[in-house]
Amino acid sequence: AFWSEEDDYGQIEAMLRESLAIFEEEGDQWGVGQCLYGLAYDPLASREVMLATLQQCLAVRLEAGDTWGVAMCHFALGEMEHMAGALAQAQQHYGRCLEIRRQIGDRMGIGTVLDYMGYVAREMGHYSEARRLHEESLVNAREIGDRLGIGGSLDNLGLVARDEGRYE
Image (tube, rainbow, N blue to C red):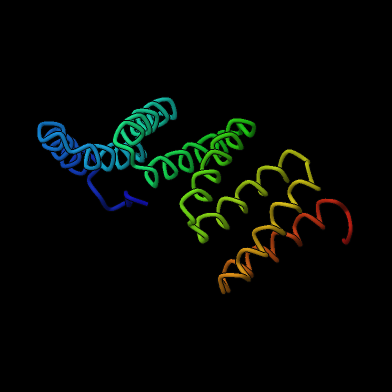
């Protein structure tokens, strides 16, 4: 996370806002997007403020043509919606992120998003969809030699089986 308990949030926010002003003055859309992304993770902000800041970041990244940054924003929006229990909205953002990661060939990112989509599907009780997503993530992880991804996907498949009542 960008913030830690020891940090003075006001000082960090002030630095980000100063940086944001400089990037805006210089017309640096990438820098603006980075600052907005950091500001969205202020632990003292309300969910609404965090979502609005990420939406603003998404708009800037779209305008700048920052494909990777757009995917990152969709993933972050998916996480926030997921944590709030807005599972359908989380899946929409994760799905858009997945489309972009596939377009740019980000195999590590693809596996991560597939697993997050699997978590949400499992929470929604859509076990066959969750299994399909985790299996796809597992295949992807094996193809790229991502041992941690393999382990995570196998664990997630076990959780789906448990939730389906296939073992006690």
